[in-house]
Length: 398
Image (cartoon, rainbow, N blue to C red):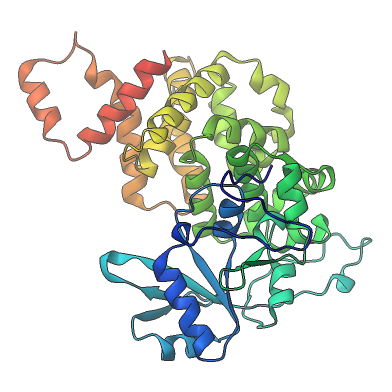
């Protein structure tokens, strides 16, 4: 439901009055200055979605008809970033950034898709084809993220049915989900995250496409995969995200070593399909993982500083402990669990080493084993804070 206790929004004609005090002043300044220079400019994306849901956005983004170089010429406090998707960051004192993107059009035409040639590579590698605001709406991922808001005219621009889906609590891709998911398989992870954060239901055809093309996720840039997985783990809904990712089958492609570990198989399996969802859910290590992630969610919800290395360690911990106790305790299994998957998303060597240390640090906090000298030595470790947090989460989950 779209919620706003202070206003009665007339969604039929898309006139929406959002109190000005809920809109970031820096974003308004960027928008007004672009308008003054003769360009179209609107608030867009997640900030519009959250404002309409009665939530206060963390970030405000602007979409404009001005090209990146033109935005940079207007704002002296601007820098351009990105290759696949060139963006302008307008930087304010204190490090506040208003991300300003030029309207894009979809680089792939839907008519080019042949259902009989499903192996066609639809992955979008470049996304700097500029367009109109309407074309920009249709190239976005989900309908609820394809809305634009004009805070001056107090009007929502909805070309994709996003308002209806916000009203009805639906996660739906814009256009044919078979095409949209193949264009950018990271949309699978984003749909999972938004469905759980907003407590929305994923539309049937979209869910089907997510399952059908889950193996395409490995074609995505490792940096984007790393970012989205971190967001899944640090969203306050990591246990629900994990359950949904397992159901969709994305973990068989992205984190097969984790599934092997949860099933107690240190040697790997010849066919990942042998690791069924039902088999994983029936294991005690799976229940331990869900409990661990629930505690992680509680910690994140309290606005504690949680590094991604801690989140990844929590994800791996039950499988690590199971394999550590097993008779299959061979040297290569720790490499499979701690290294193989992390190279797939290009975690830095430092992060890999930290995760390995955090996994093995649980035993170091045992009262029976820690002497006074070793306790002082432990306190001096640069990873002590992260290790203590992992140990605390471990105790709470037990």
